[in-house]
Every structure is written in C-alpha cells, then in structure tokens.
Image (cartoon, rainbow, N blue to C red; front, side, top):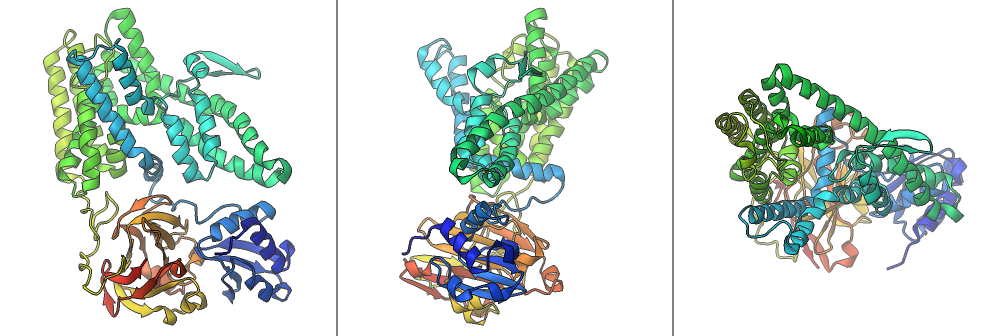
Length: 626
C-alpha cells in the first residue's frame, strides 16, 4: 500500500487545479474534495488523477470533485493549513445538535461523558462500598488502607475536569494534551488553595472558585480552545507553529478561564445562595422545593459551590444547616428515577449503568454516574427526579429539619438529620420524593429498545418493524446488514460515477421506503458528517463501511437530516444512525438512494452482495470474507 503524505497531497491538488487563486470555494463530503473553480481550463485533471491518494476526478453540479475516500477529512484539514480554504474537519465534526437549547446542551454533555461513563459508574460504586465499610466500622477513615482505597475511588471525581478535557477536545477538535494542561491548571493545588479568595492576574482582580469535580468550566474552556487553536494554526509561521500553538493556548486560556468562567459562576452561585437563604426566612417550603427540585441542576452548572460554604458555615456557627435537609429528597429522587430505569428499560446497556448508579446514589449520595449516564441523556427521568425532589423538599422544609453534620445526602447519612426538626416529616418528604420520581419514571419514562439488531440508540423508541434474522446464505466472516428498508439496487446502477465504478469499494444501494437509517455493523463511528448525510463505520475486525444517504445531498447542508450518533461513538448493528425527511430530499431535487460500500474492499478476501429485491433494515446485505 502506497504511503500518502497528506500535506504534500493537499499542496499537489491545489497546484493541479490551477493554484489557490483559481479556487473560489472548497468543502468536502464523506469521500471527496468539492472545489468550485474559477476557470476549469486551468485544472490539469490528468495530473491530479495520478496523485498518490487520489482515486479519481469527476465534474458534477458545477464542482470539481477530487475523490479521495476515507482520508478526505485529513486532506481537507491539511488544505486549511496551507490556504484560506478548509481547516474545519467537517467529517470529524459532531452531528448537528437537534431541538431546543436545553436539548442541545444535554446532547453535548452526554456525548462528552459517554466515553468515561463506565469508569465513572465503577468509581461511584467503589465509593458506595467504602462508605458502607466506614459506616459499619470495617475500615477507619484515618487508616492508611482506607486512605489509599478512597484515593482510588475518588480520583476520577476530584480530577473530573482532566477526563472531560480529553473527551471535550475530541468533540470540539482541540488538541487533547493542551486541553488536559488547561484542565490541570484549574485543579492545580495552588489554585485549589485560593478557593473562595480574591486574587489578581496582571493587576486584574478576580474571585477564585473550586474547579475540582466541576463540569461546565472545562467544557467551555476546551470549546474556546478549539477556535483559538485553529486560528493560531492558520496565522503562525510553520517554523514555530508546532510549539507556539500550545504555548499560546495555555498562556491565554488558563487566565481567561479563571478571569471569566470562575467569577461568573461565583456571582450566579452567590446570588442563588442569598435568594435561597432569604426564602428560608419567609417560606421554608418554597426554599425546600427549590433546593429539592434543582439541586442536581445546580451541581451540573457548578452553582452548588455557592451553597456549600453557607451550609458549612451554618454548621460551624450554629451547629446545624437547615439548607442541607432538602438535599436528601433531591438526591434520592434522582436515584429512584435511576432505579426505575434499571427495572423498566428494555436496553440491557442502560440497565447495566442504571442499577449500580442507583445503588451508589441511595447508599452514598454519589449521583454523577446516573445523572450523566442515565437521567440526563434520557431527559424524562431527570425531570421526574426534579418533580419528586421539589415536592419532597417542600415537605422537608415545612418540617424544619436540619443537618447537624456535613454529610453526603444518602441513606447512610440519615443519622445527621435526627436531632433537629421533625425527623418523621423528613422521612415522609424523602419517601414522597422517592415514590414520585420512581413511579413517574416507571410508568411514563422511556422504555427504550432491546440491544439487538432492531434497536435504536438507547433512549429512543423503535420506529420500524423488527428486521428478519440473517439468512442461511450469509456465511462470511462478517455480515453487513441493510441500513434501510427498501428496494436493493446494484451498485453499477447508482447515478454517480464514483460509486457506480466501484472505485470506493464493493457494495449496493437501496431506495428507501422509511425515514430511518440504521447501522449495518457493530463497531465505531469513524465519520459522522455534520450535514448528517454520511457515516463511516469500522468493525472490530477492521471492516470499514460507508453509509451515504442520497446523491449529492451534501448540498442540502443538513436540512432534512437528523443525526443520532457522533464520531467516536460505539454502535451496535441495527442502532439508529439518522432520521431523514425523504419528501424534503426529493423536493430539493436530489435522490434519496442510500449507498453502502465497504471502503477497504481491496484489503479483504471477498465482499459479496447478498441482498436482493425488497429488504428490511437489518437483514444481510453484504457477505464478507476477511
């Protein structure tokens, strides 16, 4: 296989089409560079076609299309480093967020947490067992064994910004190690020691917050880092670009985050704290409802850091904190919603996260795994937890309960609430919160589909009939399933020269009859076009499959396409990749024919189309010998 230098290839293509001055615009889809030339006569097509890494060249729709295949995002990115074009890796970009602002925020946070979900769930369970051991006297908190085990269980939570920096960098196309360096500065011991104090940077005063275990500050910082890096890579000379880009990024982003995100969060948190403290004076039930309902929302945005110091101060000066009591229904209501999901969801994957998360939430008050892995992505359980927590918090507020010690709100922490106010009303409010959250989630929450070939993405209901089982003639090492329901068409009949010629690999096309597109294999999403019209998948066996929805539908710029996956996500065969609006595609003058090809056909022993006639999504379409 010929090794390709992508920077050289980008330069050669640019020269081959007549130089940068002859290119009016440049973009790319899943397989090809799409250039709009000012003068086609200046392009040396024969020379471009001979370049290592170029499959072919075609002209269609007023565009000069250089077909490269799976590596087109890399070539496009290199093009951006040597010209005014490119730079933003469209294929690496995440699928466009859908819905209102809150839904888009949930999708973004959920995708960032998804890669660390299992370690997070394990750490939460670990902390629950340690809490249990300390409560029953099996381990003393001052014992070195406990200290070591607690460090192992708590490190992920304490240094959470570092882990989120890695996953956020992938989403926002920033350098992962630069992102980690910025996150590391936020939790650096000397910065943590300044928590709650006034500091200054170059004479500019600012308030310092505690960034350990925080979520939003590091996500915002890495999001901005992505833009800053792309700007620096374009403007810095190549001789100093490699080391000056991270140097300037760290020097700019760490102070910028400390000067902006921290003070803004502290201002909001202090305002919230003052409002709730005042509320307890004239309407304890209302204050209890606010804390009980929205505590987990405060935690997500880091606003709880404005309330925690008030709680600690109250305990130190008066011996109790009335503000802590509503935390019990708040936390246990969300845990009850997780338990309902664990019992009711048809998705085994979701249950595997929800069950231990509910246990650690009830027992130790550790809710992060369940919030970010279950309730927040599914939304309805999160809302049900808010409803239960609000009602329970109002009841607790009426009872005048308070905590005599700062403990995690959990079943094990109950003894801290026994001496002040009505413990019976505390238990009643907490029980009501648990019941409301559990019952609402159990009866009205998302059921999800089973984790089989007909399943959608966990959290989404099935939207098509179950596909047929693999047929007897599918005898290869890997079976690639039909991604859509419809009529199979030979690849040679596809009205696109590149696909029809087999240059992109062997496969077939299907004229769809439904508006859903499913994953044909189990594997990892390598490409998820931000336009939602094309997806590249790679199986654990190394088979690379491209699913391209429609012909030239990249020109629709995402209109009519709703992506259900993001780059880097693990999917199972049959999971939903996207929903489409076939009527809108046809009204725009494009074909909705869905093409599926094995892009690394040449490295495999055989790729044989076995799907013919009418196919349901999920039935065998290609038979592969490795």
